Length: 145
Image 1 (cartoon, one colour):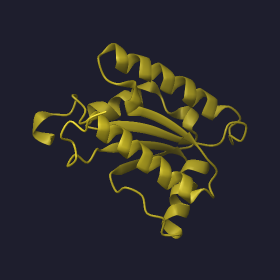
Image 2: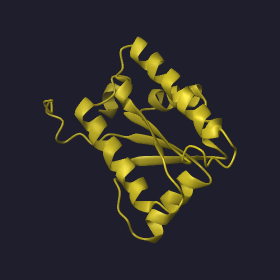
Image 3: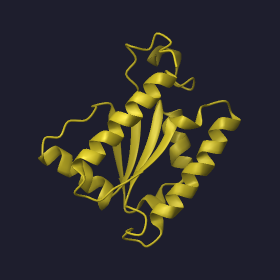
């Protein structure tokens, strides 16, 4: 895939995390000084099962180039099935984005435990590279580009 002249483009990402695994992984990354891209805005939820499709779409409307969820590992959700609900909602949001002409790859979900600082950093780096290849979101206002 060509870079489409996006070598200078630094995507804005929104990450939704639960207060358990996702947020703790981010905190652990900070405590261990594991670096990850600074272009990520974190939003904490009691559980990723509370991340509604509306929040995902609103993040794009507010200027995000990509959105991802950092959830507990499947089978280890502190609220039993919240991460499964988050997975289903993300899939639905991906369908909606594709229907309006946005790439579904602008969305992602990663599963990890609170001790996985490197997994958190890798998720941020992976999403940054994925979205960088796609270029700026067409939903961003022209003056923001």
